[in-house]
Image (cartoon, rainbow, N blue to C red; front, side, top):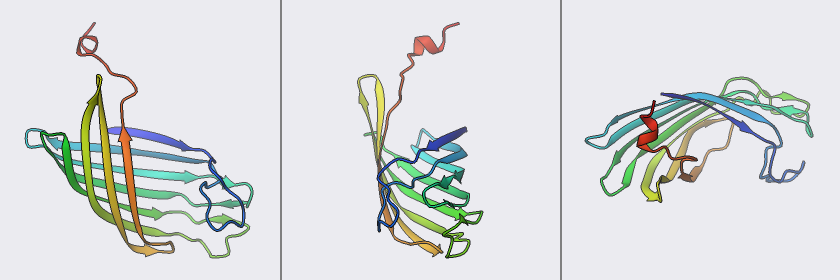
Length: 170
């Protein structure tokens, strides 16, 4: 079990009137909890996350996006070679309405679900265990938002490595 928080800063290229912007031009805070259950003798894993994203104002447009809830799940099989494969999915629902001057489309409380395959690989770099994951989601059941496919490539590595001798010291 774990809890987490993430802060999103208004970074990236953003300009009012541009068709596509790389940044959202607002602050955000994501809070949530996660779990992992595993049968490590057989290499099976079930993990999930429940989180809430609190979106701040876009001060340039006087627009605030509503609070979102997201649920993410993965079921995968780990192989002795370091490879893993499985099924991933998510559900995202906006819980509170957008607000501000240009909210011409109404509350815009959207939702969407996605499901697809994941391929992973774990390997060592020195003392560190590094993870590489490729996920593809096909979205469905979209309401008040666009629907499509998404691909994510994630590289995970620990910031520190704790030796076994240190973890058992008094």
